[in-house]
Image (cartoon, rainbow, N blue to C red; front, side, top):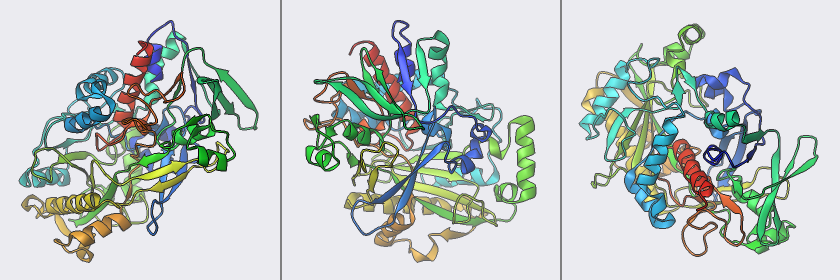
Length: 505
């Protein structure tokens, strides 16, 4: 968003960031996320309690620094599904349809490196396991395509990623032209406390430094919030924009009555299917032992290639489970398996498939815990409360297991580890229960300041209703998910919003 604004040399753009510029060398290593995701200097934890008790408690993570969550994510760059963008346009208007997002993606990819075969020479050829997975999906009706950034129909292929030359490229890359031009400035180490208002207009923001001192930054034209689905609603509430009763309970004087602030949280809930595979196949032997990891590290340091030079899921598949030739499920596939307690490789050869529904219906909420901007908000996570989500979760699990059972995998797979015999193949109720209790949110939350409808937080131009000079330009404005990944969507949304604000629309 800031980069799009800075394309106009007459505008002066200030970016205020709570975290630092990245200085951790592991951030550049695509598989370094298994360490950086837990580094408190660049990663924040958000406990996510069930929206409706009882249920499991998740920990959601977000990046903290210039580049946001693209500093610590799996580098996936999935444009999504055209028919889901058409659904978004029903809420946001024609300016937010698939053609508009498609043009935004094209613009971004001219600046931000996105690897997609065959453009990334550091990528290794597909392993025997990955070739078998591709063939197995083909046998279940999901064809291999040259580039999964295509937005129509079932497909499987290499996962596009924000990687170039074997190195992660975060969204901070987009700021370089504006920084060079001199009309864009980034201030780090300043947490935004609230939006400053004068009458019915936003006029700036107040920030707090690590030592507790506060600074006021004044805006001549616009204030644009891009704090994300989890932080933007809290920031609005601390600014007096939200449900008046909730605000008074927090000791905040209401400025704008906006009861929907923080409501409508949607998250894609994924479940992982794991299988044991033949000894010697896959990456567990290379990344799960000291000797193997040292060899992979040496290969990466010398050539920027090998298993450390790619993201966690080398294959992505969009799958239709309803017979309409319009994908409703996302599968992410890899020739490595974890030990079940974290992100460490298991002590035996394995593969994993993560499966989830693209467009969940269940909703939760995010609200400020109090007036302290450094305290995580209260997150109430949706857990398949809507029966449509339970049905979709069962179909997702069934689809992943069907791929494992395809004839093409017979020479690779020994047996299914997870969920295994605890969930019978035809038991949809048990499958949904497995996804609910053993699955988890995958850090793709949207919807807490959603557009669409007369009581929406923002209008079709992403302007906060009831106050002038204030926009929201992050995933919180999306009422639904258009993709199985949100990094690309967030950047395209920011580009579109920044371009329209720049043009005075």
